[in-house]
Amino acid sequence: MIYEDIKLILATLGRDLDWGVRASVAENIDTPQETLLTLSTDTDYRVRRYVALNSSASAGILDGLVDDNEKDVRIHIAQNLNTSTATLASLALDKDLEIRSRVAANFNTSAETLKTLSRVKRAEVAMPTLTNPNTPKDIKIKILIRLSSHEEKYVLDFVSKNHDTPDDVLQILANNAQPSRIPILENSMASARLQLSLINHETQFCIDRIIQNNDIAKYSQQLLEDPLHNTVWQFEGKAPYNRFRKTEPTLRLRCNRVVFSQFFLKIINQTCDGNAIRFIKKLNTA
Image 1: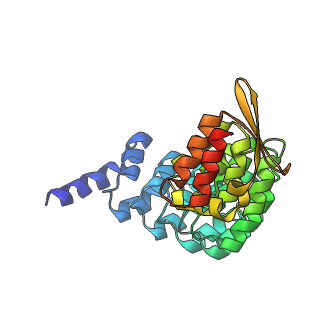
Image 2: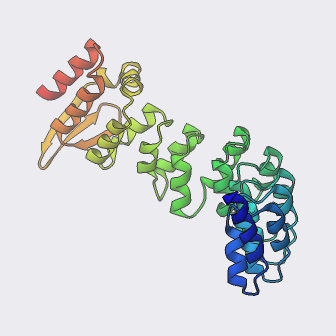
């Protein structure tokens, strides 16, 4: 009974002459659908905007606002999780970039619509398309490859953190003019080989990030497969750093010897690999 009284009050307030009062009714999740339908045709766009924002507004009401002249109204329709797939497909063709970006992020957006949005070259649309679980993986990879040559550092870092980014693309990002090494280290799907190779740069920080990934098996397996622990290293004492140089010129490490050996000890701590342990001993006595 009390709820019915609230609905009646909201319906009454929905006819108030003050747009602010009507807007408050429009955003209230307890407002009856018939009142929201009436408010969706309000002459003041600010009222219609709040209808579009209302999480209890039905798909039918939101569909009726798809052609609204006000950008703000269409933006909120595009992000409302009640918006129908068909309406989102229509908004994906909107000229406004922000509206297309909101459509790309909406979990109701179909794979077909996301495929259409994937052709938009702007990062503002491409990035939310990548985060949408409805985007097919092959489409995601195409977008990631395209964005990997973007000029903005924040976009490159976004690509580096993405779990779907191929390892060969990550390798390029690690070596380009604006390297994205830290995001690659934070990417749990990047290969152990690639992440271990980044110890060359900002040694202690990189080691800490790798250890924080808390995937001992991943790195210990790579160490067992890679000839790294069987390699003869040349040690040169040059304070404040010690240099370890692999016999092959492909990998050079500048780091404190204790820090470096501690890193490997942490990685192999849960294994019983004799070769790796002998490598550590050799490293500490070099």
